[in-house]
Image (cartoon, rainbow, N blue to C red; front, top):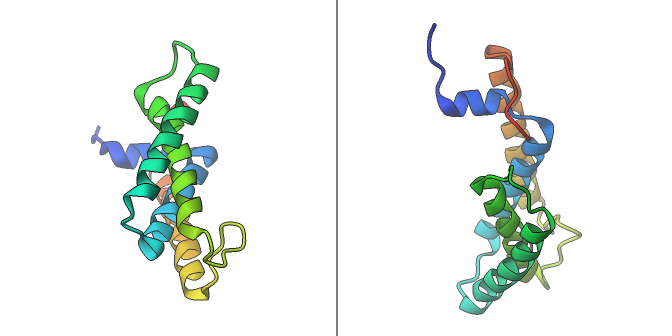
Amino acid sequence: MKRVSQPIRYFSELRAPRMVLWCYLIWYFLTIAHHFDRSPRIWLSSLGIAAVIGFALKLSVNSPGRNRWQTFRLFLMPFCVSSFSSLTKGQDFTLIFPPRLAEFVLSAGTCAAFVTTVLLIRLIRPVTSPLPA
């Protein structure tokens, strides 16, 4: 039997909640690319918030079944939220949506392309045994 590469296997078994998390990350990176600010204050503040909130989240879900990737996400999410908020402040965003249509279309289109790619991978290689959430 032919071995399937690890990324293909991962994406073929990707469940909807993780797909949403990937879309969040895509949206975040594209927003950061459009509104990047080199100010150390933004990034250090975001790291501080990530440390405090991430540690609190880790304490709240502390269980032996957690792996390093899950723990990393507990710290990454507050960092992303804090830096996103700092970079978009005063930029006329509506919730998380940028004021410029071209930026919105790029972000939404990239997320749609990602979901479409995952669904196509599933068609080519059906899910055999799902990965844990």
